[in-house]
Length: 345
Image 1 (cartoon, rainbow, N blue to C red):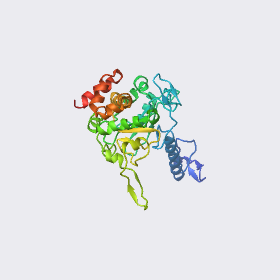
Image 2: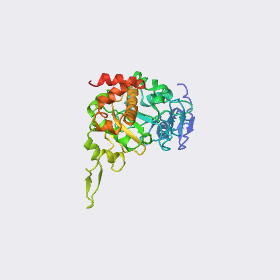
Image 3: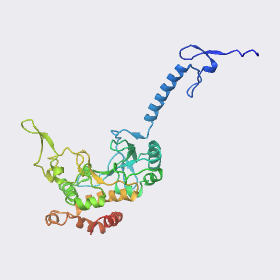
Image 4: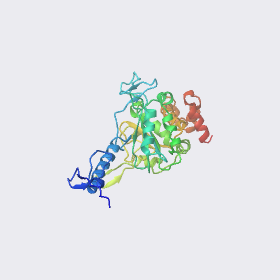
């Protein structure tokens, strides 16, 4: 019989045990050889580290992530400071709106879809949007924009970063887990009367607003006025936990009363913004644009077209009056078309 080849032995890099070279294991992380036990332990450790690094480098931030705001203006200019165009009020700013668009991913990996959004919408020098986790979603994320004027949204925002998600199998309109929220800067409102008329128009015209918005959710965006007014929970003089009932819309506008439920259609829980939570989300840019035009239009209409005399007559804050005014404003042409499509005459 032929003489057997002499076996070569080496020492395991980790434990030092002498093992036959044919039984030693290599890996993708270094050039050292290990015994079976040490190899398994090493690979497990390296995979855990890789997963941690992948999470650290993920384009999807945790839900609590909140970077410093970048204000995006009509001319495309980006700034850490909001513009203050009103000479009669040194503290009043332009109206900035930030949206939160929730979606569910499909056949493409979540991180790939999120990275596509960032690569398409953000610029080399500035972020326009960022991506966050959201506990209400099954396998998706929310796109959060920095505060922008309507002019920036219509003229400078790269909407391909949202419409392109459709080809990647993402869904938003048909996903029951998703919503579209728009935040408006509180500092833009002229005074408490302006704010009062703003959310009174929305709450008093709930059927028409919901038809336009495409969403009716008592759980996530409740329009009931009593729900809005009486959601302030506190202790009474005897130490009992009670729900306050003696509030009014004007007291909320003046910040003399508050509620403890952020799931109202008009959410006043945020210190710097008024949040409208009732829009049905979509990956169709025109749907998001029409929502932003709606917010901007209600803001301007309730300031310029709703003086006390018109409000007291009972017609100024009617949806039909708002709708008629929108139809005369060229800058809201998309909104006017959407209202005509979705709302009854």
